[in-house]
Amino acid sequence: MDKRSVKRVVLFWGLLFFVMAGGAMAMLAWAETVRTQEEEMLGQLILMEPKTEGEYVSVLRGKQRAGKEYAINTGRRADEKYGYVGNYAAASPAVDAFLTPLLFVTAFLGLLLGALLLFQKKRQAEMELELFDLQDKLTQAREENQALRGRMEEEEAKTKALVTDVSHQLKTPLSSLKMCYEIADTSSFTLQEQRAFLAQGLCEVNKLENLIHSLVQASRLEAGMIQIHQEPTSLKKILKGAVNSVYMKAYDRGISISLDDFEDKNLSLDARWTQEALVNVLDNAVKYSEKDTAIEIRVRPMISHYLLEIEDEGVGIAPQEANRIFQRFYRGSSSKAMKAEGTGVGLYLARRILEAQGGTICVKKGKVGSLFQITVPFHCF
Amino acid sequence: MSEKILETEDLCKYYGTGENVVKAIDHTDMHIQRGKFTAIVGRSGSGKSTLLHMLGALDRPDSGRVLIEGKDVFSLKDEQLAVFRRRKIGFVFQNFNLIPSLNVWENIVLPIGLDKRKVNRGFVLDLAERIGIGDKLDSLPNTLSGGQQQRVAIARALAAKPAIILADEPTGSLDSSTELEVISLLKACVSEFGQTLVMITHDETISQMADRALVIADGRVVSK
Image (spheres, rainbow over the protein chains, first blue to last red):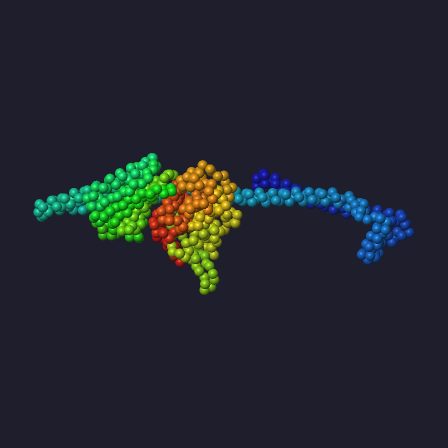
């Protein structure tokens, strides 16, 4: 126990002892005064009427008494007869001497004790709340520490997974390429057939190049090397840039892309990466659309965000795949998805880029194909 | 791995007795990871709201424990629980639950005031601006549209900077584009402030945007 609480305990017990001692002393003094008073009364009566000394002693000492009630009434009537009514203080010197000061002292000490007890209780409640608060803060600090450690472990695990994924992704086109060259190198095929395999080899090289480009981007994003620098930019400019990037590819397949005019605002965005994200979504739409279909882009400002809708007339996405298409390297399970070129990284990147800027992307069933809904906030956090 | 900020152990909540007993929550063990957006998906009557109410210590279970940051909340004294809940959790309900006699600003700062904390005016004004209700601070709730009222409710839940936001079908009363906006807002805010978001929804699109979706059926949770 510290000095303060020792002091408080000593004070409390000291006060209590003082009160009890004072009370005991007062009781003794009272008893003494009452006895003295009785003896004086006895003496006065005897002196008044010496012949009745014996009777007075026996009455006062309880040896000879009439009924209590009867005696009280007789006494009262005598008092009234001679005009001594309602004068309590004068009737008994003992009462006079002690009652009033005793009452005051008792009341004072009682209030003091009460106040001390109340104060004590209040302090206790305050301390309990303070303790609770501290425990809470400690828990929070511990949790934050654990969260940091958890994040570190997660980062490590992510890096390991990325390395595994990348090597896995590279294996297939690489072995295909190897096979093409091995075959082209043998003499059991005609020149024409060898040339065909060489051409196929070139195709695989191009695929590899695309794959590596996407993988480098993905890994840079994971490693935090891609820094999103948000600056005031025009959304229209970004969108136009994105459409231009995929326009030729769409044109080659007879797919039309339409973009309605909209009210432009200067938003805080990273122009380069946002365009990249939109290109990935549009690229996806073109890839999975049939020939001679249309892709519609609609932009609408809402209260705190822009709503960007990209709707295609393609094969659509099964509901159970809706979330998975945004996962890294996920290609989809439909046969068309399997056949199409791609690395499964585009939509993953798009989501990461948009979410890093306070936006979102999701996919719904469109009228024919898929409807991608993208939100971009007016104010970034 | 991200640790558990919310956890239930063998949680049970029954309504009714005997043959008519309804097992709203039936021996459920689940947890929510700190800092992530978790969607709780399920059909009507699957026990989603009951579960959320217990995660937010608004309702007592019949048996089992609810742990918030490792603390068994129902073992706390009433006064401590009230303080704890007020500081740790922000709620967003489907029907907004704004106080009709208070204006937008007063509704937003009410939880902070109840906790006897000082209001960081700059922060709250900034938040209101970004959420899109910066020009409506003096208005009363009944003069606002559903979407605007829900934004106020979100601002209220975020202004006190609680560690956890629990949302019970926050977009249920809104049209689809406002819905998307509201979800985007919530997502961006909790991500920015490192908060944990738990949202009940029956909408597949919303659950698509979560980091993790838990499916609840017949009072039990199955991880997706």
